[in-house]
Image (cartoon, rainbow, N blue to C red; front, side):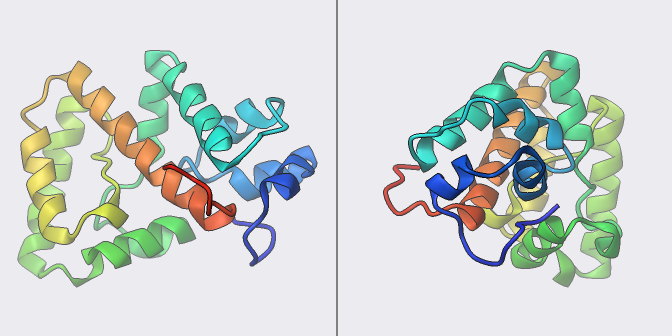
Length: 178
């Protein structure tokens, strides 16, 4: 699900999108979870970019634990089958240097991904655009030490960072404080 046009939208244009175009445009700002976009559609009109982001963040924060876990499960494993990722995830993983990992680093990351999923029941989620491959490898090792409650919270905070950057790709945000 990608932006219906190659240009960045004004908040006014966002507020004027019909339901289908709104979901098509914002349905992947939370990876493979168009229900988040659907959940804020009827909160329009948004006064500004920050208001739109706040509505999306609040929607995610208000999800019950099982739905938050589902949001995390919709994310791909890092360094796994780049060609099967959404265009947004492909770009983000490339930007973080995941595609330039050595064979040893890929094997390491896959090992930690498996340990992480076995422990928490969902993939390791980190905002790749705000990290590089070394920080990601360190992050997964560090976050493996978290308890499940802590890690659900950490994962959701990373989802919201990813969401913010994806929304910035889609909506004018010059006046944003985010």
